[in-house]
Each structure stands twice: as C-alpha cells, then as structure tokens.
Image (cartoon, rainbow, N blue to C red; front, side, top):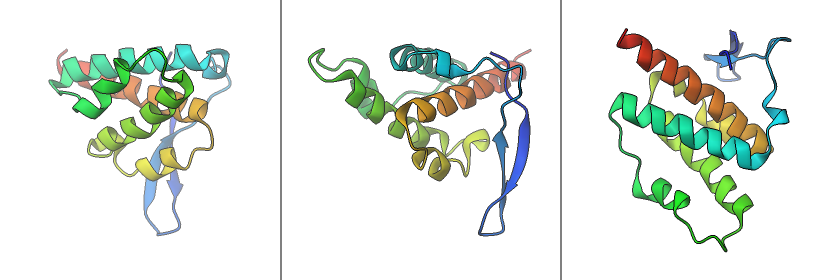
Length: 129
C-alpha cells in the first residue's frame, strides 16, 4: 500500500497534528479480515524493530505466543492498544496515541497502526538509502 497523504488537524488544545487522510485511490484495509490485519501489523512491527534496532517489550511479544485457546479477538484488541504505547515516543507517532485509543473499533485501530508502521518503515529505510 502507498502511504496516504498527510493533512494537519487543529486540536482543541490549540496544537496541530499531522494525520493521514485517505485518497480515493487507496485500497481500503476494510477488505482485510481482522486476522489478516493483525498479521500485517506483526509483519510491519517486525520490520520496524529490525530496521530501528528496537526490541519489543516482553508484554507485546507475549501476545504472539499466547495459548491458542485464548480468544483471537482479545489478543487483537490487546495488540491494538499496546502498539500505540510504542509509537508515542517516535517522531512520526508523537501525539497520536490518544487518537488511536479513541478509535471505536479494533479493526480501525489496527488499520491506522498498520498505516503508521508502514510509514515508519519507509522513513527508516529511506535513511539507509
């Protein structure tokens, strides 16, 4: 997927943030199932960790190795809330955590996180070209 265009949004506190906006040509992630979206987030997260020489906290790595009897929707929800905690300390993710956490569905949250991770991966890889 190509990264979506960015736009600046004014927040209530007077600060502005840059967010991705969808263009009509973007393939929506809504066509992906929640399981496919989760897998794509893990792949992008792994790519980011390798490129940035970053180690995932054990609490997040644990989500990947959970007992198969644990409900997948619960694992996906936990992942969708854990990744923003990592991204909040990165320039491209700064100021976005509250927006991600207020996103009404796990699918939409994982989709937004996937877009941000892909953007981060492109930025990190661009530094090495």
